[in-house]
Length: 138
Image (cartoon, rainbow, N blue to C red; front, side, top):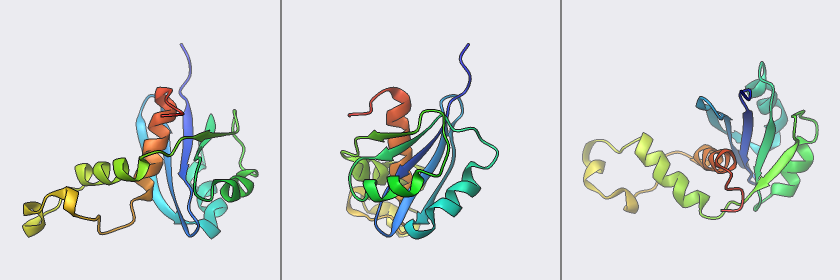
C-alpha cells in the first residue's frame, strides 16, 4: 500500500495567493488566502509537521514570481505546474456550495452573486484536486 501524499496547492496572484493543504486520502486539510509578500512565512507555518509530496502551482498569473519564492520550501517531487483554466469560476461555485447565502440573499441565484470574501483558496483546492485526480492539464 502506498503512503499518504500531502500536497501544498497554490493559486498564485500579485497581491494575494490562495493556498490549500490536501491529502490524497483525507482531502482538504487546510485552506486560506494569504498575502503574496508574506508567502514563505505563511507556508512554513501551514506545512509545519507535514512532509510534502509536492507543491502544486497554478500555471498562469504571477506563477513564475511565486515559484522563485517557493524554491526554499522542500518537497519530495518539487514544484509541479497545473493548468488554471476555469479555476476562478469553479472556485466561486465551490465557495457558494460550502457557504450558501443566507437571509434575503438566498433568493438571488448564486450565479448573480459575488462571494463577500476573497476565494482564491478555493481555486487552490481546485488545482490540488486536479493534480490528485491526474488532470494536470484539464
